Image (tube, rainbow, N blue to C red):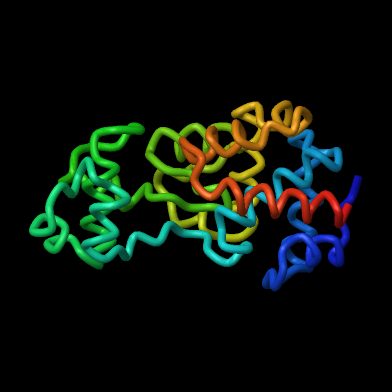
Length: 202
């Protein structure tokens, strides 16, 4: 089934460049079998939540000290440490994403270079590399491309398919979808509301 611009506007209130997003989504969703109302609704809802309504295609790491301690307690155990990183996105990314997901250590700069980009934010050198090999584009050496709308949408569909989220959407397992995207239940209520709204629009 094909998504209309009006349906997309109903699903995502205030979406910018709705015509462009609708065209891009209609081109790529069939290739990744996002092709039923349940699948499309879940996909659009999760994408809308992750990207602030298709507005933000790069991870915002401009945290205050208190937020750093709350969101990343493993890395920022006290206010003195957190204050040293407050509102310094590059330094924050290089700490929280160091030595995992294929990234090098803190000094490598990989954390910031391969921070979350796309509608469903792809994070880490390994994910950039896997996605690039899947679609034949070198995102490892051109990570900024993932913040361009067409690639942002394509990466989301690829991630969705790769992690078996169509099958979970068929079963209406939105908690499990959220866990696979985010690692936990963060924002589940909003995601569920957006999914219900999207289904109604279809």
